[in-house]
Length: 270
Image 1 (cartoon, one colour):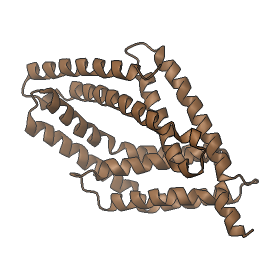
Image 2 (tube, helix red, strand yellow; image 1 turned 90 degrees about the vertical axis):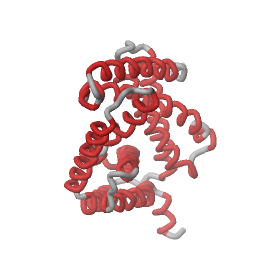
Image 3 (tube, rainbow, N blue to C red; image 1 turned 120 degrees about the vertical axis):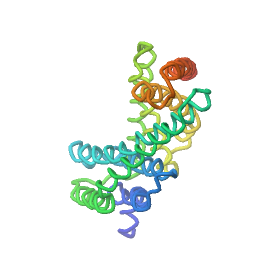
């Protein structure tokens, strides 16, 4: 058999096929960031998917190496987080009929986007991401054993599914005020979904049938997270309302919406 064919089948040689398109997308979006568009969010998603790939290859790369690289990607993705929170908050408050001061809210959103753009520029993704790929290749090429990408995919999907089940059990027993446990379910669902989407062509059909319910789970818990994040944002930025009464009314609306979304999410915990 052609050695190149073997290399395409082993996990060491396959990493680049999955990672390179995400690296290219992240670099492209970082180079032409338009704070008024969806670029910040899409860049954030690309970086999150890269973090999931590194987690998937952790058995071959080692925990210390992977967590160091994942921490950098997490910091870069978090830079766009506040800007995204404002986008969601303004849309949610408008839908609920809250009395926002439009000019103040837009000013806060612009400031958040400007901070995100500045932070991402300083992160130097154009040079750092290719360097990360280079370091991953170096680590993989010195690995003492070869592993098929199909075997790695199955093992890591199973591990992610076990983790998600544990988090769901923990969330079922959590106090109503413990949104940390619920947030962990959302993150676990997202990781498993990304893995299934990456490896769908090489996984048994019985594995990929979980994609649809996973997307539903992620969506429900994502909506809950949006309500919780907006509630926190409003509590810390009451200045975006015309007066104190308007801020209190908005928080009351958000509390009711958060409870409604929590009930909807709880139905999926079993």
